[in-house]
Every structure is written in structure tokens, then in C-alpha cells.
Image (cartoon, rainbow, N blue to C red; front, side, top):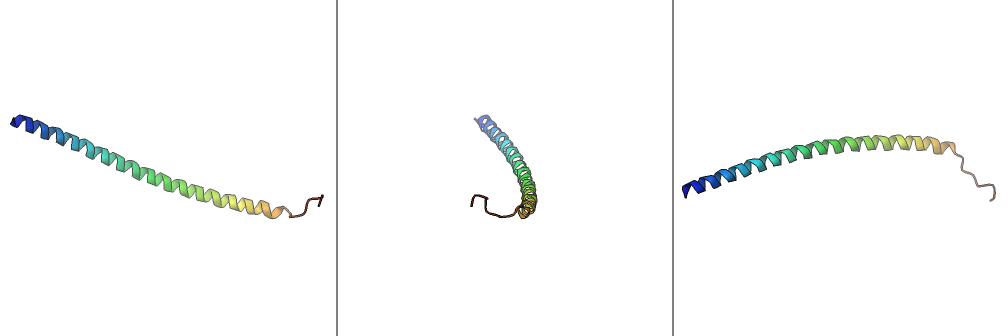
Amino acid sequence: MANSGTDRLDELEIIVAHQARTIEDLNETVIRQGREIERLERLVEAMVKRFQAVEEQVLSDIPVTKPPHW
């Protein structure tokens, strides 16, 4: 009977060790993804600024006039 309790405790310790490793792996993944999201957000922000600058240049060159049929 004591052997069964020891086996059960060993099995629980193994399960806890696997779960701890899984949690560490997931944490590393979340951290890595957070960094990647921050990088992509900076990239998108830079692209938006560049697009707005180009848009301002293009829009300022187009005269605002009524179409000929008005």
C-alpha cells in the first residue's frame, strides 16, 4: 500500500514538472510575441507617417476646381 502512495506522489511530481516547463515555454512565447507586436506597431506607425507625408505632397499639387460641366 505504501508503494502505491509513493508511485502516486512520483507521478504527481512528474506532472507538476511538465506543467512548470509548459508554463515557462508559454511565458517565453508570450514575451517574444509581445516584442514582435511592439516592433510591428512601430513599423506600421512609421509607414503611416510616410504615407501621410506623401499624401500631403500629392494633395497639395492637385488644384481644387469645378469640373468643366458646372
